[in-house]
Image 1 (tube, rainbow, N blue to C red):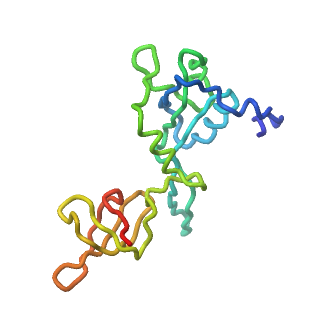
Image 2: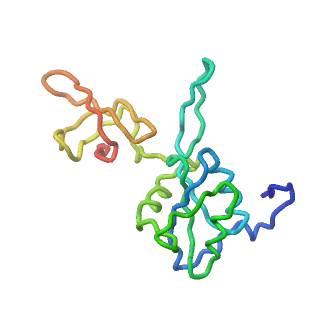
Length: 185
């Protein structure tokens, strides 16, 4: 890894110094500067995580898709507040501050960040599909169409799905959360 001044940084500094008591904390960063904040936090030995998704940008009659922060202006940092110098996060370039409760950082509840990490694909983007593919037969798990079988028409990167359900000799499109679906063989 190359530091901001162009010198090579030792690989040992890239590994996070996170103990067993580490928790995830949210930090507010300047909008659009998530990558810069992540780089500087890694240089200091912290372990940041930014959930990313694809974002379509239209400008000057061009359409471009690029990775963007799922929560613009926020990122997560694994910290052990008893061992690490967490106050230096607040002084990091592009970081506004840790989300605080009084004079101590407020930890994120256990589960959501770990779930985002599990949903992150090899490309670094969130993948809400859960193995679902367009054209597959699916069973709806909850809601007014629970236990009905349908065909997955489309799935967007935000986790919304359109299922074609056979009702009264026709296929009716139903939009729902992809977590409410399971593929059937």
